[in-house]
Image (cartoon, rainbow, N blue to C red):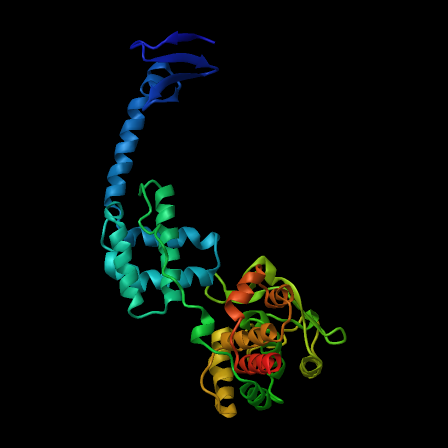
Length: 360
């Protein structure tokens, strides 16, 4: 190996096999530059400065809208299609109208706060919080791409009002009316599961006959219906690792599944669309669930409200949090308690009677 001081005495030039290495201090850090010849290696720092200048010029020209387009495309291989769609919707509705034409490098924390303030006038706190998380991920990736030096969205997200204060569970009478309205319906078994163990709509619509064991009264959750990259539907992974689980069911639910499984092969979908393929949760809501609410004489609620109802009553009935979390597919039992520990009318009455007995 040939080793010598560079001509200007500021670094070391050495031969490494067929290449030359020029090692020199740049901004207080030792860096190596390589070339096929001494001259090419010595020119390394100059090339690096020119490349940095070109990158700086490119970064100066990148607008928020242009980066959003690039970011959305790059994420297609990393996250679900439904996540991309929801993120793109949030960005196009709130971020692009406000700061889409701005250069990335000019953004400040005040710009992000202004976007959040506008969204907060029209959305629930939970939606604003999600928007904050999307912006934070967007600008974090821009930093990794060398287009930003700091993250303007790395600020405190808005506080979210607990769901139990805004959406009370259905009453016992309402649950009974809904189950009665669903009696004999092709989705009776589905409604029975969501009302008793709080399964998610996508999980229910992804069930195959092989996933249900009527004798053992169990349901295996293997996946969930989600958007496919090509625009159709597919069965993807559950919301979290805890979503892959075995869910128990009541004897009444087992009876409804006995009827629903009659004549089905193990690989058949239990709740398919009319064409035999996957049924989207949205189509299920508008074509079947909302008309069912009308027949039951109930106000328009969501499937999430039914899940919310089932898990709330489990907690109210003193089922231990770990068990409720496993049934719900939650990774953290504390999340189950925080969201579903409601002060139900039945619970309040029970508390008053307990106090009366204690102090009478």
